[in-house]
Image 1 (cartoon, rainbow, N blue to C red):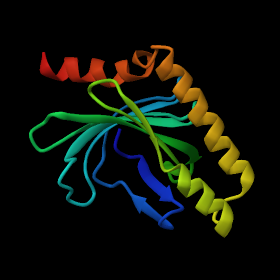
Image 2: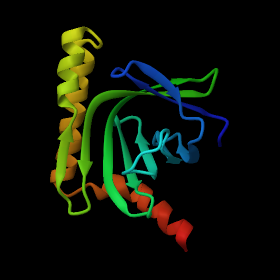
Image 3: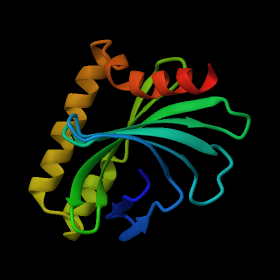
Image 4: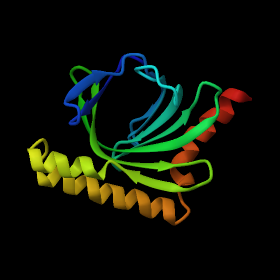
Amino acid sequence: MNDYKLFRKRFIPDEIVELKDDIIISLDKEKNILLTKWKVLKPRSDIDTGISAYFMDEGFKISKEYNKENELVYWYCDIIDTDYDENTKSYIFTDLLADVLIYPDNSVKVVDLDEIGTALETGLCDSCLMSKSLKITSKLLDIIYSGNFDSLSHYINDYEKQVTN
């Protein structure tokens, strides 16, 4: 399963990083859903590990993020665009800047919308890509506010139940 390569591409800062330490748990090519577990790339005081579900057709990555005490910090939802190179078996997940956080008390916070403005003003991204980001963010918020976030989070929760039993 780990013969695939995973990359994170960001506009701010401008970088492409191989996620070489991420462990692929499962890849459902029919549903285009990838499940990974990981440790943070750079040490942080708030987050240590997590499990992510990439919904490649939907345009978002849902991550359940834990601190060093293995306590849930929040669900972090990245808005992404996915490219796959069959020849190199590489997935490139482009961060489309907007993010949604869901805290343990179920409060919701949308962050980094200012980065969309910066990206547009400085020419880092075109308006079509940023329009796509806003539409995907709206779709994700509709799922969350309608009480259907479990339709996404269950992939991670089911995996966690399997490994603890």
